[in-house]
Image 1: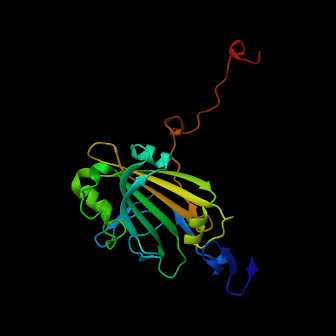
Image 2: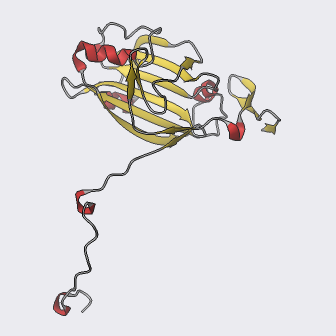
Length: 222
C-alpha cells in the first residue's frame, strides 16, 4: 500500500493498481427501512428512494444453476436447481462500487414478466413479482462478516485482505408464505455501518420494580 495525496494505491486482483479513497471513502449507515417510488420500485438500506445509483459493470439476468447449498436451502430448492439469477454491481453516482447484488428467484415465479430485464429500475422486478400474485413480499436479512473472493475484491475495487459484510435477504411471498427470492449483497466493510433499533421484551416493559425483601428461610444464602 502506497499513500498518495489522492488516497491510497491498492493492488486489486484482475484490475491492477488503483487509487482508493482510504479513510475518506464514503460510509453509509444502514437501517431497516424499505422504501418505494414509482420510478425505481423498491430501495433497500442503505439506498434511498430519491438517490440515483448506477451500474459499475453491465447487469446480467439469466437462468443458471444455484450451486450454493446455503442459498438453495434458504430459497427451498435443491442445490443445482436452475433458477433465474440477477447480477448487479451498483453504487451511488460519483462513488466507487458500493455492493455486489445477486438475486435468485424461485422457479415457481420463473414466468413472471420482467425478471430477465436489465434496463428497469433496481427494485422494479420485485414489483413484478408482487403483481404476479406474491403481494406483499416480506423480508428477513442475515448478516455476517467474511473475507472476499478474488472476484468480489476486483468488482468492489478493494484488496482481498479487507473483510466484507455479506447480507443475505430472503423475500417471502405474501401469497403462500414461502420464499420467492433470495438476494446476496456483498459490501466492503469500510463502506457501511449497520443501525438496529432494539425492542424491549415483555419482561422489560414495566419500570424496574422496587427491591423485594426475601424472608430468611427462603434466602438461598442461608
